[in-house]
Length: 321
Image 1 (cartoon, helix red, strand yellow):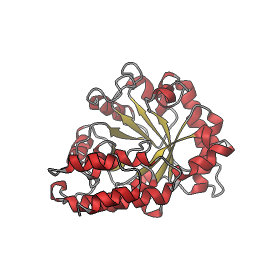
Image 2 (cartoon, rainbow, N blue to C red; image 1 turned 180 degrees about the horizontal axis):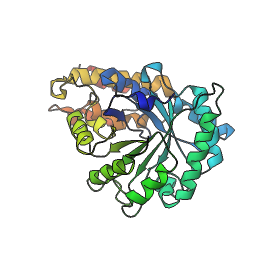
Image 3 (tube, one colour; image 1 turned 90 degrees about the vertical axis):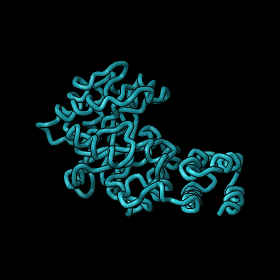
Image 4 (tube, helix red, strand yellow; image 1 turned 45 degrees about the vertical axis):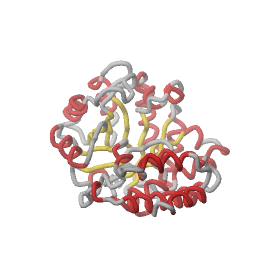
């Protein structure tokens, strides 16, 4: 069941991003050039463990078979809820489970979740233990692999101390964003610290994956080589290039019409997944993904930003096709 051990190295992954990597967008990425591993958005364990919250949050855990291997990512601070969510992930058919120990958002951190767990390694270890226990108690009798996505420290760099604590729990993989929580995304990623994590894990079975400031696929391959990493996770780079993971595509050769048609497909996916249940403005963060790279793109985006629904967007774009 441990798909991580079957991947050719180095492998490449799309990062989990809130209000970005839902099934609607992942299907676009798959159609452009599928990465080796995909992640859901991060989902609240506490929410999933409440009757009202579960029905609201389950659409965030929808996926299609062409996205495999796919990992469900959870955040929270209650070990007992991670146990229950591990069982749910297995029931839903995920290939793996990831614990978010890296989100720097204040509303997450103040709940001792996300990057807040870096300050509480004892609780972090308990959460890993419980989610692994839940991942083992499936009806199939086979355990889902558990990974952790985190940072190199909270207020200051503490890679050695923190990663050592995680390695004690023997996760299948650790994905390391090369910045502290305090640094957010305001400084270049410390890839030397990610390299240190790989050195710390050299006598374990835990894979180490680097994340932060990856410009393109060639850059990803070079970073994996330079720091002897098992894989690379890409986040914001996908906004500049939906074809990021496709070696056969030169982004400079993609025509505006291709980008616009891809955007319309994403719009259809979004409405199919969410209907009227999600704020339509969520789609607007994607406009620059598709409408960029040609002379009048900025003006076209400005028109799209004031659109209120699909029909208005289609009307605007049909004049450009």
